[in-house]
Image (cartoon, rainbow over all chains, first blue to last red; front, side, top):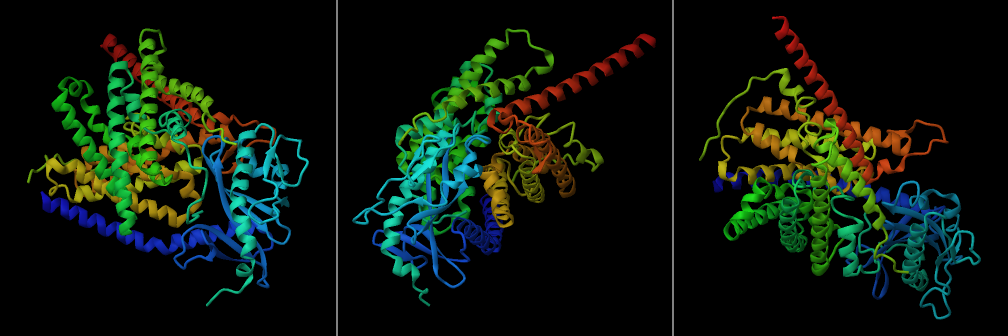
Length: 211
Length: 204
Length: 220
């Protein structure tokens, strides 16, 4: 009896390991392409990216064993820094919504948004991905730092549809309030953490990669 | 997209996790887990209640084991074995619960019959383990999630049992007897439960 | 080592066909309900899930059939589960390698194939007692029946709930999609609807058979 179970476990183990090893590089490549596509969408004009992580000490290049939230620096064809893409998330109507936001340090503003994962109600909450007026909020949303660089000068907030007055506000979609609010919360929460760190590490982000 | 490294969010409060699993994203009516026992055991309130309790217990045990296994496998870098280990542990947990119930309450054991070992193939149990891993809950959050899921499952089962007991006395077209009617009822229940969206989740 | 009874079955067309209609896993045997409801919000997802399940059915059916004389009775369920979990893990990585978008759409239900009662049921009731080829043919029939059932649901839900089929717009811009169809309640309603249809067809054909034999009895 033990022989049989052992035999089955061995066959099973072999099959799984085989498939895992074969698919590992393919999956990694798929994920790389997917991430790149998302980053290039939120930072217009970018053609290449480098990964960084936000540690307790600040920004560090990814892959060196540093642990923390990942963010992507995007560069144009001349190698100049076009912007930084960072992820965010917040509880929406049905489940957590995951976003990728694009930030341009030159104008100190948000320049792009992409919904990575959402299970919002089709036809209502999922408008945050498609509604052109809503998406236009994120073309140059103000995210300037306060005086001592510890956070945003004005927290990004979502306001009722049609009542937007300031450049750091997001005009909600009428009929999709919860999803719109989630977007604003996700962005503000992530930006408060990321933007100061990004501004502090501009030199690191702009310098060519260490060989 | 695999965003390696944690996406930081406000940590979910325990009450939110519980309400979310039990009502807002009810495992049966919103997530489509545990449908087979839902259709099969919901004819009488008493069986439904017993099944619900057994499921809650197995969920708690599985949640605990899954947390431990995941921790171990991550340490050993053997994450591709996770599914096999989870299902093996669930099967064992159900076996243990079966022996336990048989010894301490033979009446309950007889009334549950074949449905007890069938808890192994209840997608809600495995689904629970998989979701709590994906959401990266810590130990306490996982246990609360399991409790919420189990309570939600029992709630759905009891509601359906109550409805079906009433309907068994009513005149219903022959064609819709059995599963067809149960499914349409389930659809109405699911529609009602959609009203819970946003419950407990209003921060900011 | 306990030997299982070997009631070998002759391989006929029925071995394959019965999984499509007479013993359709979803509409007749009412198995595999969870993925049937969960991933049929679009026709593409439905087919993908059906094919993934068919792969697991074939793989696990083959292995269980090959090993049937060596698996002792006491541990047979545990063995089947491990074998099934192996193939599900393989499908899980396979789909990730093919398309991450598809993987995200199917979500946890790929891994949940392992507790799909159809697969364990087939392994226990058929593959463990039959030779390799009949087991494979039956598994293929069941898998196709399952895929067709999923497609039936997926197509209806996508057409009514989204106005598209396989992503292709079917109606004019003014079509208001019946959104509830692609939400959880819609899954229940559409499956209930298909079951109603099946039951009605079955009762009608049974009544016809009764009338025919009754008429023959009266005539004879």
